[in-house]
Length: 271
Image 1: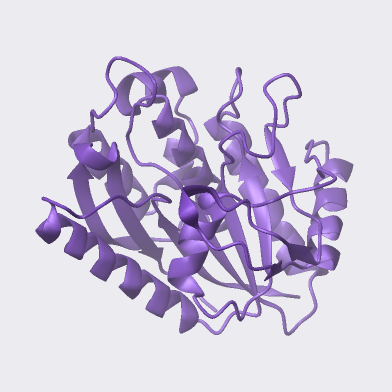
Image 2: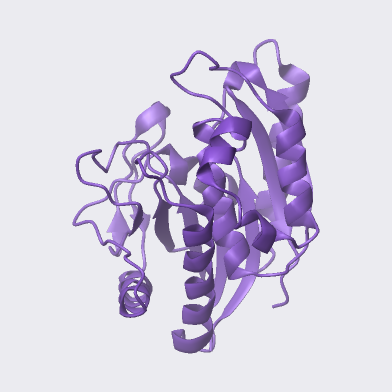
């Protein structure tokens, strides 16, 4: 059986530091620490749980949950990010898609994926040398209806079971959720950040109460954390894969200029 050896979550956007030098520095330092801790788990594979930003998926063809199943990906290159190819793991991702679908969970395998900043910013932080194969696992919250916290938690449960039951014994899997925290995009409230809610959400995760977060509704998240805040469902997916795990906040900064509550967490996972 394989092992989940690390679980981490972070915002998947960055902004210009001008005028925000102290906050930006704390975010950058926290991100670097998150990357250091992830690498110290010595993973053989990295599953990046994130959302796409309509660069690979269309609103008229809903794919709320999707997975990349290639052995190599060419990044989309949005936000000026590099487009050098990155390694995938077709065997793992294809096997997991089959495992999930066999258990009644619809996990779509798009024919072609070019990971955008939702994958590439976190990946650039934790694996700058591109040493690890990745599996991009999408919780696409741009759709209506969006994936729910309950569904997201279930996806995490299935991921945990697949790693334990079907991966080879020496497979060491690290999980990295990307997105959030609270932010409003393309609406009159754009730029708003709900720091109180963000800290409550992280406190729930830090104390191992992810299962309670899975009982939230998207409607309540929209009110408290904004339309962009629905990306926290990726964090809930991760929590479902490591149920009961406690954790710590590595950084948090409310940065309206970046239109986001910037956060990073590390979870205590027995390897």
